[in-house]
Image (tube, rainbow, N blue to C red; front, side, top):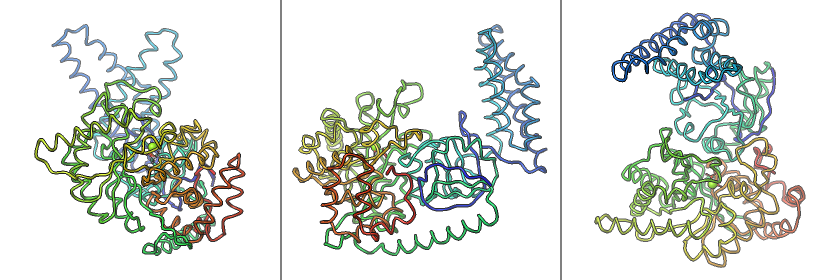
Length: 587
Ligand code: PEP
Ligand code: MG
């Protein structure tokens, strides 16, 4: 038994076998092969090598025919690599000795051959490592084509998924029904996969650094997402203890869900609107069962899926309409595409630092079509219920005006085509870039509402990469600069009478949610599963008290002092529903 520690990013406890994934061109899983299946696995490897040889021969022949034999020589080198015992026999030996799947064995061979190639002093030989990738990539593809190959959308049974990283598009493809828990080397609580795990109520621990190396495939894991721990091969007694804790957690969840019909009202009568953040349309049902009064953030880019294909206007209209129907009579706020350059195609330019580069509205000038299609679908969805359009990553008036101009263009286009649409669909800004937050008063006349994206706001204000576990200790939602910016935004929204919400992860953390209410926020949007806990906390403290507390926090110079004051002043029952320490949300 050993214990790995990271940050708990989605609470709860799960027990199950590890499925280890590594990403190559596509994800590669490391599977334990039972001794009686080793021969069959060797056959799979042999078949894939054979298929690769046939394909390479065919390519070589075609090339010789079409462009001449001299150009086809490179494929001779590829064929030789394929036959080389360093590849072929070594891979088979790994399958046999380590009892792992062929994909994983090939990956190990590839790593050792790359290490060997990098030592060559001859640059021609060194560069052959690209050919090696090509050859091994082909064999991997052929293995993937075989019917037993697992994939993200076809997991081999209920598993704890252990991955280095899990991108949003991979998360979109994942067979979540078979995921008991998620364990990742990178990431922190505002990491998108963590956000989804929380939404779905699946325990997750992130930022474990080298879990993919330390955890053997098939080993039994206990994932405690509340404490941020992963226990590998637990002893019998430890396992019994975890089962008891798991049952307690389940009962507490059930009790909290029972508060669904209760209003989120403070004892002095202040009502707070609690909405849900969702990534997948199917989550609307969970939002409802947890008492959400609307969808405060639909991260629409998840509709692109792993293939990064833009959905058509009709496909989108269908999704937005269904969301509105499911949430009726509550509003649904759809955030327009928050994607990077990669969504425009693999052959285009790339950004050296995507978090600060060309993304979201900044892509509009380069490629307005996907935005136009989305705005048309959203305007048309306005006929089916209270949909709201939210623009992300606005950094100033120019971005906002460009987006608003496109919206007007979309309306004119619909009118010209005689297509009906909602006449008063509210349009708002996701305040998440500090420059926009600072000029919220200037942006206000142009928009109908604001929603603060604290995940990015904190990242940019404090210059802390939200996905990098090495600096996650510096990601501090209670930093004085964060609280002061939030207070300033609340004042600007009040002065201009613009509805204001928070849709970052702060809203789903009871202690931080209480401070937000103290700062004047009356709408909070969070992972559906966080709603009951936040509601429990709100029902325990008067808003007037929170206002006084927030005002005192705004005078303090450090997060530590702010946290200390809040913990001292808030009544125990306000944080009772927080249960064990909430997953790593900074303070
Ligand atoms: C945010 O930045 O706070 C937010 C809600 O959006 P995302 O987490 O998708 O960046
Ligand atoms: Mg954001």
